[in-house]
Image (cartoon, rainbow, N blue to C red):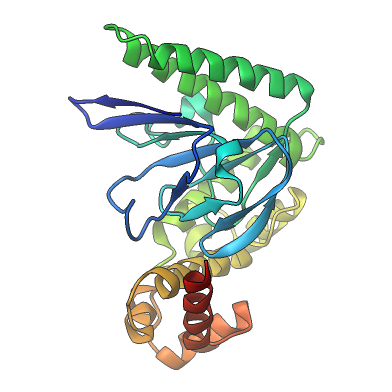
Length: 286
């Protein structure tokens, strides 16, 4: 089942998938014009999800959130329940005061698998049922009703994620917002700004203060986050585009091909050309 609403005046789109075989996303090919954020729920047994060419275990009774520029596929797609929306339908950045998920819930590097207890599963089943009913009710307030439901879903998933990923120790919300802002700034600037000091200055903090803050929240260091974001983008270019290593070097803000190659090998264990060769073989074998 695939249900879809398109707002003709804005181009906003919202989709719901349930028992849909073959549900996936290939950002650099068939889906390059559809910039959908995805919330995927695995209500069944544990299975494999492949994100940007890397396999991960998608535990049963858990949620996964994915950015619009990520490619993914599921081992058992028909068992996944998923929501997709573009920024024209609902912009999480413009409405961060409503949902508080920017820089936390959706990430290109840390794939957050949010575990669901029985109560959460029941609530999501109910929400899915209400979503389905509203998709099938074509009237003048359908768009508004589905928008309200999407906000409710994002807020609820964010609250569940915070329970699992934010320390129980009560810290000022402002500290956590700094982490979210840092992640958002990295997403916007990683191709040109590779130094922690750049982001620290924008946040009016010292690099050491940032590192200490991330440690409090059991997060990777700011430097690791920047390096992993660059590495993820390099992998995408190598797997899904025909850009040369030289082109990728300059596009990711490096001035020297050898330096970029050493950076990539340090973070992945293989040279860019070898990664592309192995990745192409894996793609052909599927």
